[in-house]
Image (cartoon, rainbow, N blue to C red):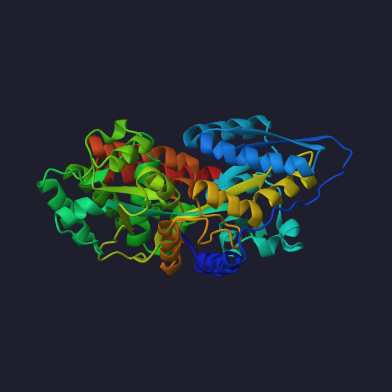
Length: 437
């Protein structure tokens, strides 16, 4: 599914020129609620890492300093744990006032269920709309209404070790065949071509989702992902099988490290950083981790090339903004919205980029003095892409995801074929579609 975010990065970079000239912005606050009423806002997100918690503790302290009547209680859980817990909380009705969400279907299901507050008036009838890159808000819209606010901008790139590439006189591949040739040369010389950790199969979904968007006609893809297509045709386009074949090929030909299904994404990244693999498929937000100990010059990056013959868009890049939603039944909507406005402000966005190296969706947050050249270059590549294909595992119904992703793990072990996986995906899609009618 495409999300046309072509103006997103250009707006960020244009505003960055102004901020670079003026220096870091001064922190500001917005008032919310009565100054005398004591209010507790529960805030739940998916970043439990120490550096992330340090940042959010800083934001909370700044906000509470200016709003002594408000107490922010923060909780965090990592990706898979977060997905499980937010479902439990939603089912129980014990939902935090502000909670993290990926864009696309992951957020839309909350909106349809009344579990997300309509933020349209709050954003469009205030200066908030001028402080957020509005193109990044689009994937959080449902039926024209805004239900989520983007925190960051992200996309997927293939990083490569410049020294290893130079050793074998390799050039950055621009086509699928060139990419396979690079992998074969590396393997033939005893190198691990690609570090891959598929313990949690969202990692494989980023490969397959990218292939889907480049091989399947966009209208067909949209109809399948949103379950609006005819039941007989759901996920039957041959491009889906071809996408799984390409993913399986990388494993069968030995281009991934062995035992990928038992390795975490972070451990695979550590292997790449240590020089034990030549390439690694990662998110833009991870560039700062690569640069942490070795600087920004030892690695390069490129978009995973699409193959020929597909009906999709070969110039798409996989990625999306993600951010926060306000619980539809919160007892403190004014305070929750006010804190969310503060969290996503250009002032806090600037600190976000400076401290974590992750691109913020706040206007002007990424500047030359607070970000890595690689991050700014990645943003420029996002802007040059024809559009963005949202994360596959958060852009379709969870019941389909729970069949699709384990099927990708099964491909790597050889226990299932691409055709068998897509037959299972088709069957569950038909079932889910009938349940939603």
